[in-house]
Amino acid sequence: MDSFKNYLFLWLFIIPTWTTAGADGFTPLGRFRQSSALVGNKLYFFGSSVIVQSRDNIILDVTLSTLNTSNPLWFLSNSSVPTNSAFASACVGGPYKNMIYLLEHLNTTNDVSNNIIVYALDTISGTWIIPIMSGTIPVSRQQFQAINDANGKIYMFGGFKGFMSPNSGGVLNDINILDTFSLTWIQGSNVSAPTSRADFSATLLKNGLILYLGGGDNINMAEIPIYDTYNNSWSKMIATGDSIDPRSGHTAVLSPDGHVIIYGGSKNNATLDQSQQIASLDTTLNPYKWSVKSMIGNNVPPPLVFHSATIVGNFMILAFGQKGVNNAFDSNDLNSQLYILDTRNYVWVTSTNTSTNSPNPQNPSVAQIQTVIVSNSNSLSTGVIVAIPIISNVLIAIAGFIGYWLFKKNERDDIVRIAGSKNTA
Ligand SMILES: *[C@@H]1O[C@H](CO)[C@@H](O)[C@H](O)[C@H]1NC(C)=O
Ligand SMILES: *[C@@H]1O[C@H](CO)[C@@H](O)[C@H](O)[C@H]1NC(C)=O
Ligand SMILES: *[C@@H]1O[C@H](CO)[C@@H](O)[C@H](O)[C@H]1NC(C)=O
Ligand SMILES: *[C@@H]1O[C@H](CO)[C@@H](O)[C@H](O)[C@H]1NC(C)=O
Ligand SMILES: *[C@@H]1O[C@H](CO)[C@@H](O)[C@H](O)[C@H]1NC(C)=O
Ligand SMILES: *[C@@H]1O[C@H](CO)[C@@H](O)[C@H](O)[C@H]1NC(C)=O
Ligand SMILES: *[C@@H]1O[C@H](CO)[C@@H](O)[C@H](O)[C@H]1NC(C)=O
Image (cartoon, rainbow, N blue to C red; front, side, top):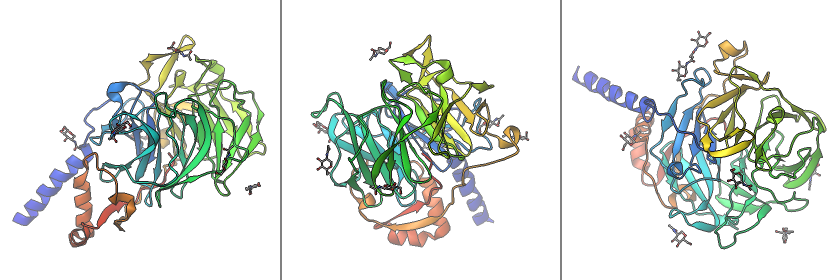
C-alpha cells in the first residue's frame, strides 16, 4: 500500500512538471531575425534582433490536432542561447536528429568571431555545448539560411561577413558542409557557383537538390541556382510561369506535393506588392514553374520580412518578423501572431485540426521514442557546457524505464538520448 502511494506520488509529481514546464500562458512578444528549427512536434526559435530577446529559446508545440492561431501552446525554455543571437541560422542534425546546430558569428562574450561558431543544443537534455570542429572552419557570417539534409549534413552557403569582424565586408558565395556525425567542415564546390548573396532562402527538395531563391534587389527569381547534394555540383534552372519580384528576407518551405512556397520579404527596403506576397514554384515540372497566389482565407497575414516559416504536414506556419505598413517596414512594428497556410489549396486558416479543415488528415510522422546508449565520442565530450539541463525529469524517467542499472553503469562514458522524428527544419 505504502509503496503504491509512493509510486502514485512520484508520477503525480513528475507528469505535471513535465507537461506544464514552461507553458502556463506564456506568450512571446513580437521579434525579428530569430532563427528556427523543428524537432518532432516542437518548433524552436532562437534569439531576436531585439536585444532583450536575443538569448530567448522559445518553443511552439505544433501538434496538428491542436495547433491554432488563437491559443498557440508556447513554452519559454530555460536553456537560453549562450550568445546574443540574431541573423543566424539553425539546423537539425546528429545521429538521432534531436540536436539543433546554431551557426553563429558571435562568441559567448558577444564578440564577432573570425570563424563560424557552432552552438549545439541537445533537445533532450536542454544542454548547449560548443563542439570542437575539424576541417577548415569557414569564415563567420550572418544573414544566410543554412539547410540540413536527412543524413546529418548541413549546407551553409553565402551570407554577409560581420560588420565588425576582422574580416568584415562583403557578401559571400562559398558553400561549406558541416557533417554533424563526424563534426567536420568540408568545402563544397565553387565551380559555377552563383553570385554572392544574403537574406536568400534555401530549400532542399526530396531529390537532394537545394534551391536558392532571392537574396538581393537585382537577383532574378526565375534564374534559380541549384546545389546538388548528391554529387556536390552547382547548376541553374530557368523557371517559367509568372513573373516574381526580386526579394530578400523572405521565407521558403517545400510542400508535400513538391511546391516551394515563398512568403514576404522586401525589395529596395520596401514591402512587396500585395499581389506578390505569396508565390509557389512547382518543382515537379521541368523546367520549374512559378505561380503567384492570391491571399485568401480567414486569417491572411500582413506583409512580413525577417520572419520564420516551417512546414508541418500540409501546413506552412509563419511566425514573427517585421510587419509592413504603408509600403515600409518598421523595426518597432513586430509580428507576434501565427499565420497558417493550408498548402493543398493556398487558404490561410486559423487551425490545423484536419477534421475541420479537410477530410484528409496528415500529421507529420510522430516522434518515435526510442532510447539508445551512445558511446561518448567527440560529439559531446568536447566543448563547454554553457547551460543547465531543463528536462532531467524526463531523462531520469526514461532511464528508469529501460533499466536504471544500465544508465548508472554507463553514465560516466555514455549519454542517454531519444531518437527524434523527422526533420523538416
Ligand atoms: C525555469 O526557471 C524558472 C525560474 O528559475 C523556474 O521557476 C522553472 O521551474 C524552470 N523551469 C524548468 C522547466 O526547469
Ligand atoms: C477538431 O475538430 C473536430 C471536428 O470538428 C472537433 O470535434 C474537435 O473538438 C476539434 N479539436 C480541437 C482540439 O478543437
Ligand atoms: C487551440 O490550442 C490550444 C492549445 O493547444 C487548445 O487548448 C485549444 O483547444 C485549441 N482551440 C481550438 C479551437 O482548436
Ligand atoms: C570572444 O572574442 C573576443 C575577441 O576576439 C575575445 O577577446 C574573447 O576572449 C572571446 N570570448 C570567448 C569566451 O572566447
Ligand atoms: C575554388 O576551390 C578551390 C579548391 O578549394 C580553390 O583552390 C580555388 O581557389 C577556389 N576558387 C575560387 C574562385 O574561389
Ligand atoms: C551531378 O548529377 C546531375 C544529375 O544526375 C548531373 O546532371 C550532373 O552533371 C552531375 N554533375 C557532376 C559534376 O557530376
Ligand atoms: C530601410 O528602412 C529603415 C526604416 O525606414 C531605415 O532605418 C534603413 O536605414 C533603411 N535601409 C536602407 C538600406 O535604406
